[in-house]
Length: 297
Image (tube, rainbow, N blue to C red; front, side, top):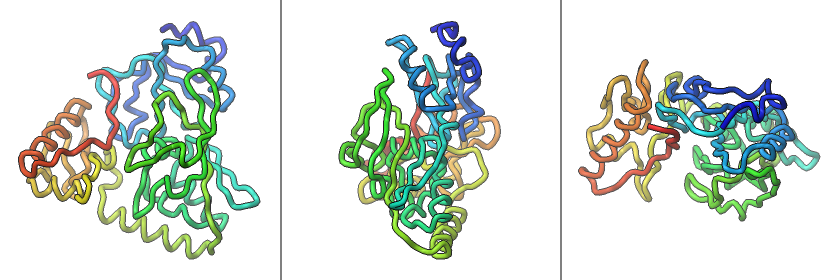
């Protein structure tokens, strides 16, 4: 696909052969064939309607629960970071755009004395990714607080999905990847700013004490099997501290893979697969990736 088809209308926000590593928490990944960062919802709609019908689109937000492979992503990589508005209506319903960081939504709710979204302070991602993954932490998930979601498909057509429509399960939803989530409405209730802040402080403290912070990582690597904790299975299999080049299983929380310095995506993915194999040999339980792996090997 040639950038010439779009550059006249989208010149300020569209790029070719852009390194995606700088947009991902792992700090790895090849080039985007075309990278588009829309500033407005209407601009995105216009882009989607203008693109060729066979154009592939991959949407990413914070790049936090994501591994981009070393040979990059074909088609268009859409980054939603500039679609980040948060608002509240007279009934206390909070609307957050897809590119808003979960932690910022939690702080916004606190600043308006609205409770129910404190758990978002512990999720290092954006609203769009949280919807797609039904992200959760500290006993709550997106499905517990979402009223409905506004989305657009790859042809530029809008639709509102109710909580039921989304069919949210553990770390997945029932919709196909053709939908790009634009915003979500969250239910909240009244509480004091102090009480909300106290809850958020406990979550932040718990996260800092249990998880590696300030390092290049993709967050939780594997989903928890039913009735089990992935980190315990990994630890029991003797994988804590395993390395593959500069990719390492965290000593602090062994369901996290860390890029110590110069790991590439292949080393990170290979380390994860080695851990999966060892856990299976040790327990007969097959771990499933929670981190989304995309692009060309």
